[in-house]
Length: 164
Image (cartoon, rainbow, N blue to C red):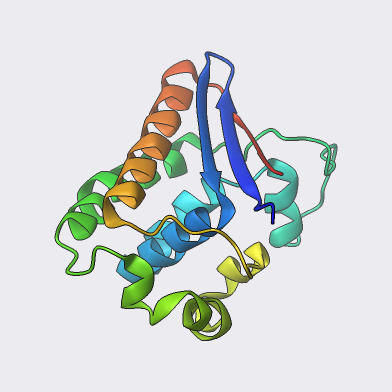
């Protein structure tokens, strides 16, 4: 079975690839830390078109074929700060090595826990995904996202994002 992946690419060769289940688990986990601050992380990982569709904003010139990310520098800086100050330290202090175990396993996570979460996460529509749920792996991917966000800010250039 092929699993979906989410890709992030900045034109200076910064590239991050995450299995979609792992990405969904990351977004859920950080939502449990601070829902409002995580929304900045989540929004920064959406394409501009997906962002507009998700929040019922006019699509303007954007279509589903556009992979350019939603890019608001102040929000991305807040996302970086959140990852550094709260997400990484929380993962480092996590009791469980398997984050899915914290949520009762994959089936419980997909069928119960996740869909009772914040409304904005539901657009990810997970089920039967591959998860690398080790806390060190999640920490690694959060650091990779943070670095991508920082590179985009340094270049003042949005990255591209897509799911395949």
